[in-house]
Image 1 (tube, rainbow, N blue to C red):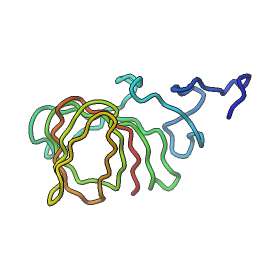
Image 2 (cartoon, rainbow, N blue to C red):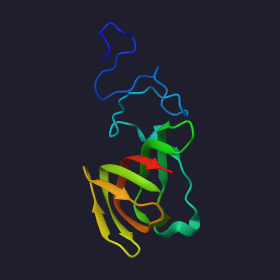
Image 3 (cartoon, rainbow, N blue to C red):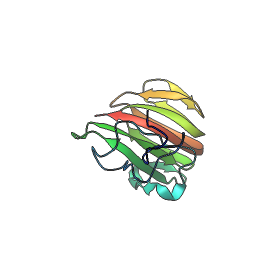
Image 4 (cartoon, one colour):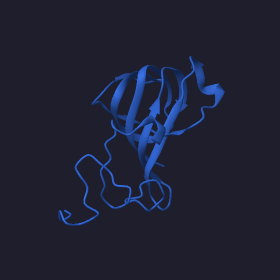
Length: 143
């Protein structure tokens, strides 16, 4: 725990500008990011392959908060606007912060996700995401 007089001290639910979060291996061992409060303009556009888009005009944005030096562990924020897309999943655990979606896993379950839901996707799962409301999630991927 940081002492109140420490200039690196953070208010709960915030991240300080002095704590770099996006560069591989440069994030502090412990940090806080208020995911709902992270402004949309702080997220970077992640272009979708047009072959993944089934319907609508979904836009994906995100921000890597931490990446292990070997690139095999990634933590971040990801957001998608309404539409229907397909994907092949990595080994991922995520928590939905806002929005709603239906995730259909080929040969598996249909997952209804919304705020507060934790979801695990298995590496190699082929999925179809129907995003009903812009969905924002905090995730951890293991490659």
